[in-house]
Image (cartoon, rainbow, N blue to C red; front, side, top):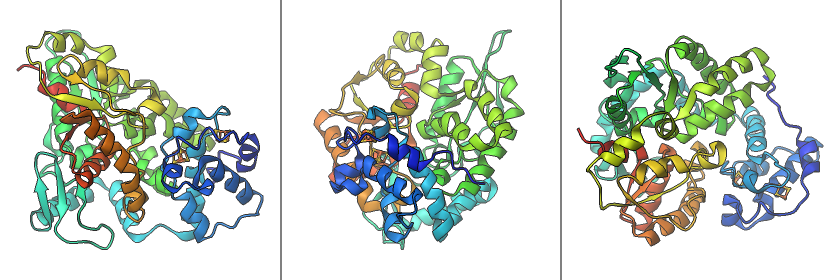
Amino acid sequence: MSNNKFDFMAIADQCVKCGKCKPVCTIFNINQDETTSPRGFIDLLGAYKRDELELDLNAKEIFESCFLCTNCVEVCPMDLPTDMLIEQVRSDIAKKFGITWYKRVFFFLLRHRKIMDLMSKLGYVFQTCGLKIEKETQSAVLRFSLPIIKKDRALPYADTISFLNKYPENLRFSKVEKRKKVAIFIGCMGNYTYTNIGDSLVKILKKLEIDVFIPKKQLCCGAPAYFTGDFDTVDYLIKKNIKYFETFINDVEAIIIPEATCSAMINIDWVHFLHDQPDWKKRAEKLVPKVIMATKYLETATKLKDILTDSNKKFDDLVTYHDPCHAKKMQGIYQEPRTLLSKNYKLIEMSDSNRCCGFGGVTMQSEKYHLAKAAGSPKAAMIRDTKANIVSAECSACRMQITNSMYVADVKAVFKNPIELIADAIEE
Ligand code: SF4
Ligand code: SF4
């Protein structure tokens, strides 16, 4: 699989060196170093293509420091896709240096749902002795450091039963002849850790009298492997999912996803990844019109707004909404969750809701945690400044990162997916 969509040299030639991308770049703001800035990356990639730069450990270090936040893409006058170039070169890096053992284990588990289920159960047992659990923030702190993850970090923990194992495949909520039916793609973190998101989505769909199909054989969308350059795993997961989605896509109005990253991966990155496999690309493109983020579907295609307006549950909670990179910048979704939340909660904007939270992917959360920590600190500070008691975003990766950033900075707000907040506002 070559999967080289972009010609690094041609793109490097297109960069006009205007520098507009630098002030918004997450890693440049930490390092203040031209080498780790969007135009620095692009320059180096051109040199790599011209055989003037060896892909050595130093280059690996540089290309692994990008957060893939797409801030640079949003402002670039030449529309240069720096994030996708980095994803491409990470595949070359993975081929040359291999993938670290624990990432290989993780990606193996993503391919094999049943073993992941078992590991998650074992993880649940380990938690009881290895973690200090904080129920309110749905996070846990390690009692001792592990080789990859040090203590004094707030981490997500596995729930007793996964979302996909909790419900039957079909939930019939429609009471009318002409039935509406949607499928839920839950994402790995929503399935194993923040299972309340799926429960809340089911509750909302029940209220809306929309039938639900829970596709039990769904696998990871492939995002963690894609950002790490493990393209074999990505290829496997995308094709397995496409084949499976095709078996039910005509029976549902939409596949709804309460997770920005999974939604962007399926809607945008699958098609991009399959650019050199035309038959598969066409199959992925056919699914795209029906795959939609949950708040967008609920706001545009249902009567939820009216239900929330009529609800007597008006909360005093002050909610500040963070825009996940994969929602606003990649899919243009930012108004929909705010519109729904504003019906029952007081909203307050943080100073830069569009600033990347600093999650950055598996590598950033393990061996480059110092960068994730540095990127997370301004986000925690702007949340503190709002005095909000709840921070919300439709993304569990942001949730993991922001919860930890707030833990580190001693900010007391609690993180909730907007779907959870909306479900709380529905009267039973
Ligand atoms: S994707 Fe984000 S971190 Fe990477 S170069 Fe662009 S702005 Fe910088
Ligand atoms: S904004 Fe685009 S064109 Fe300008 S320096 Fe950055 S990558 Fe190059």
